[in-house]
Length: 403
Image (tube, rainbow, N blue to C red; front, side, top):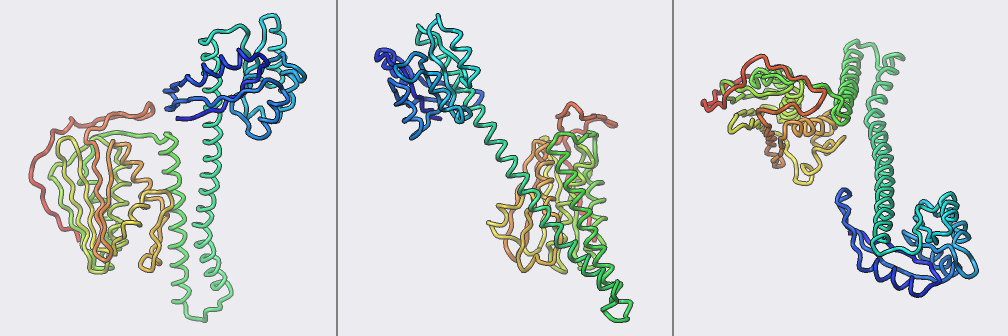
């Protein structure tokens, strides 16, 4: 519910009381803006008094009679010209002075109402004026929020790039000046660190491109019948070197035939994020358990680890852009802070949900539930089905130890 303040300026007491009575009993339902509007009405019988009221407490809508004793309605309009973006003025004129209404609109009035008018005509004019005012305010609010989001985005992006660039510059200066001695192994290690930092910046750029394509709706999708087990195996293989180096075991428990209608690239991004995070934030000699099933038209993907875990406050922030959990345990773990945000947006494309359960120092479980038979959601999506739609599978899952 929004309350708009209306100032009625007219030298006829009967007109003031009639307008006040009608508007105080009027409530406008703006369904398309998801709001209702009522009115708080003040009155003035002269332009001078009106300017004093406007100076102390500007109204949202000004109902202004042209013919006033002393200062005219046009004079009042001229005096508040600098406030025309915040106050919408409806000029009240007689039928014989329509040319005055045209002049008023040229000077900044929003609309005019010709005397005599009915309560219905008054309500219609006020409804149009109120809707225009609220739409304009909402647009300004969105513009301010857009500027703020852009500012925050650039600030966070600059912060995320500042550290790796500084590290690269430091390493390269040491290598250039040979200030670390004559041992080639020392410089080789520095070059390795440079490569890691470059990989991190490259991943940040790719994640940003994915994010903007998804949010803008410009990401082209190719929906096919895909084998989730096959995609999961590829994701596991991509993290095996890192898992093996830390003696982390990865177990895949999945239905023998686990198909769904999906864009294979999107599913790979989801699984890559879940599995790589489970390894990255795990403990040495830990485990990653991946469970995938399909029941009742839904695909359930659960990835659990025996890692460092998170607090409730930390999990509440997880799926926002550029969020990385920073503490003593994660200080040396690199990431863009966009992976989980992108994953959540992709899960939404499959009419799905993603949740997380975590216990500090015990481990974390991410669970994604996706629609198994998603329909083409966008005009630019390409749907090509190379196999027949799979029937729901109730076979018992098989256990595959991968590492």
